[in-house]
Length: 275
Image (cartoon, rainbow, N blue to C red):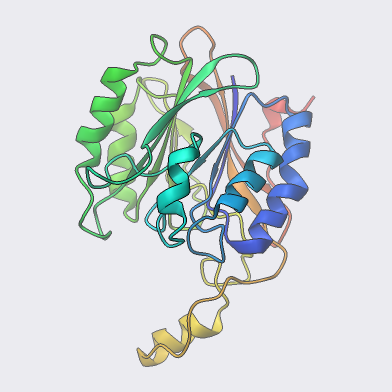
């Protein structure tokens, strides 16, 4: 199975990058499964129902969220009628929506997509991600319940992300980190066959402070005093993510590579899909 995971889409310029690049990638690379983190897609904070459908129309098969899941209050309602919108699994018990979804892939298989959120340097209200993920994997094991399993772990600390990666090794096709908005260079296939990357980066304008216009973050760093709200940077965005190919017999990864297209960052393509 050919899987593309796209990192946090930030604002309108990030959505433009999705619309400009994703349909071509799906066609040129014969992608089977596309997952997009959309938690910053509405003005940098949360997601709306219209944007949810916009990302699906561009080719996403599932959309994951994170700590900004409820910043757009309509998400608390429309997530119940959005079966491919996935909020963190380990949110408090009575949170609306779902923390995982079985998704039909473009090649007629089933993929389990899980979203979980970290607790190190994050808001403390979430439950134990390790226990929540364990329950999910027991309920829908790789190969028995799904042809592929992808986990978006939305977290601040690289150490916590790595711990989740090793915890899932051999049981998940891909563990990919989101939230920090900076792509890491540690993409690898772990010992037991799980593809791993600490952070997929953001799909946004990299002439920014993690996707936001530079002036207000600098003001706060220099003075400690907020003067206005954060606004997404509006320059040309880079689509940033990770490509994974799995073995159909095992559901585990055999290849992984970073993906970057457009904007300021150097381009990166999965050479194993380029004929």
